[in-house]
Length: 370
Ligand code: NAD
Ligand code: AHE
Ligand code: ZN
Image 1 (cartoon, rainbow, N blue to C red):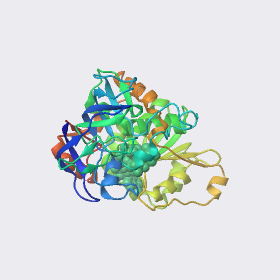
Image 2: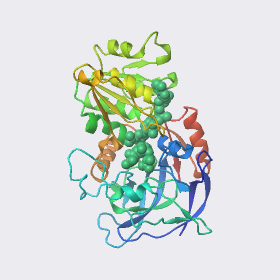
Image 3: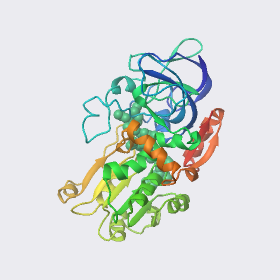
Image 4: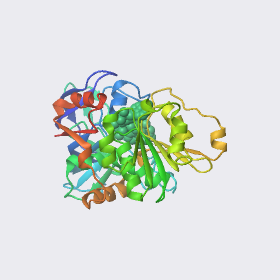
């Protein structure tokens, strides 16, 4: 079939919106009509060339929601008409990783996914001239239609609106999951969240949900303050306005250090500050941000010797097919909020403007509606 998509042709180039060919679903695969897709910082990270695994030409996008149109042989968990959210972290429920209680990093299709291919080693996308176009993070939601492995879709309730639940495909689940799955933060804790963008705000609402006593937000952009307060931030710190070092300031503000700190910036200097503002003896620091190619983190080992723990999380430690439908339920029941974070709605033709808004710090989530 023909569909419309935004293609990343080379690092640093604007996406090209054009018609492409899409092959039908093969065994174990499903064809999905994407109804809405969110622009995550990670898509821009790859488009710009900062992602060491970035491949071109590719159809980016990993945050979406849509409807199953057709299923390939052997597919049993979804049927045409089902509403689904694509999963860049699949859940096969069979691999060594899925069977291990401490990780969500299903490896069933990791090698082909990393090469921009479907599990059989081929791409379903081609240009109208027949040249192959790669998939991205197993999702390619910047296409009106896409093909996904069955293990990489979560079936969700049909009354949930596509233009907001698409964000559960990455940002919402990553932020809330970092709190409840990775940190397993307790009621009454004190936390510091670095970066009040599309991920950090969801960390904040996760902390509010579990009953944190203090939620400190740190961002260089003072324009992020009002939204973060809406989601539960109790204290705002702009590092540019702190006289002296940031870490002792945060340790003092949290009465000895954070029980939990989170990096949602992708900046390795921020990651160090996040670790070092964690409480001596028990503080845990969770890295969520994805750092550019070649970047390294550092601290003095004594920071760990004296009881701080450094952790990381992908997709908030969530097992997609199991956890994503529950998060959609939480949204529909009003337990979590998404709507205020969808700051812009665009047509596919305007997708490059969505990335401009992200760069300018003006959007939290720009969503493309097909
Ligand atoms: P964003 O651009 O919306 O937000 C980043 C925020 O950090 C901005 O508000 C910015 O002003 C702030 N910031 C930048 N430098 C700072 C500094 N030095 N000190 C304080 N604040 C600073 O991005 P996002 O969508 O929230 O994504 C954040 C990071 O999380 C990115 O690196 C993204 O790739 C990553 N991410 C990781 C996962 C995962 O599964 N681990 C999932 C999604 C996104
Ligand atoms: N090269 C990666 C994309 C960048 C990345 O590190 N992605 C994170 C999630 S960020 C979501 O916004 C990830 O969990 N990747 C899965 C993995 O196993 O690397 C890619 O996935 O192509
Ligand atoms: Zn993402």
